[in-house]
Length: 395
Image 1: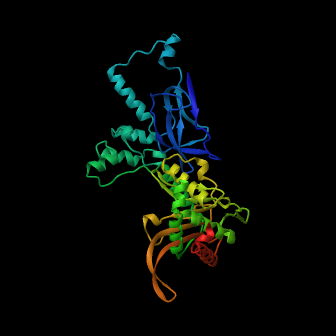
Image 2: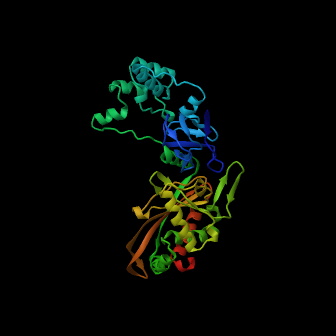
Image 3: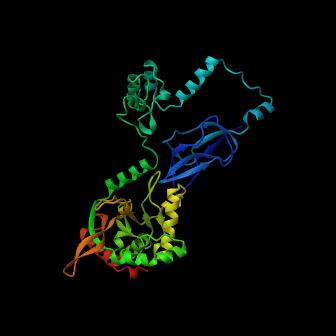
């Protein structure tokens, strides 16, 4: 008996997912709850478990292809050979060795994404389509792919490059890398990006964090600078609500959010994702630190949930630990601003007419010029710096 498993709704309002990795192949026997594949939705990789015991008959998508929610993902043979035999069906006679060799080849070629014209060209040029890595949309094999394979003696472009000393390498443009590219391109096409930069003196903040490390250890919390930044940002956004907003062009309105959900850009093994700390206005320093620790761990271990990546109103990207003095972050559209924190380091600065060594950090604010102007951005940054330089007001 065949059972067709459809891609379940694994997120709020999501309509499709990209198959990032298959853990099974056609012909495999699987058990209930065994991982079938990883699916990417809204920048989260979600593991899809098998709903049944059975044998994989067909996979309906390749790695890198998108599948609509409630569209077929996998079909199973739930009965298996033993059940069929019990029903009085005799197994088919084993094909001759030559037929066995031809059948798998035909099957693998049939699953390749290619147009009839490309298939004919491959046949004429004696190229095995199953061995060609497609460069067209969704991994489709193009005429150019076939001609290159033919020119390299039937090898794929990647294999040919490796044989020639590795002059080129083709890396699949799939998963979180492609999802990030889509979102960043949308942001650049839509928002009018401007970046404002200033420096801030974190000497008092560095000292306060040192004093609180003991209490953090008692609470079992790793205390970074981000909870302080979030508290300062909350105060600032309440003074400048147009930065915690979205632009409704169709409705002709700037929609100010009266709730504060801060996304924090996090580098995970699969790429850049943005977990969201929700309800910042109702959390103290310790609660924010605990949330940051928890979500960062889930993001890096690949166990982040889709709901934990949604609903952001403002984003922070902490570039500092990696180095750098200046950057121009891209807004996490449809938000209208993003704050970048650059490297914290000791620098000589003038204070009260004398040169002093202080703990300094550069801050960058990329904002949508359709919603906020340069003067507002400068005032926003001045206010944020004022709060950061008086950190005890953030407790």
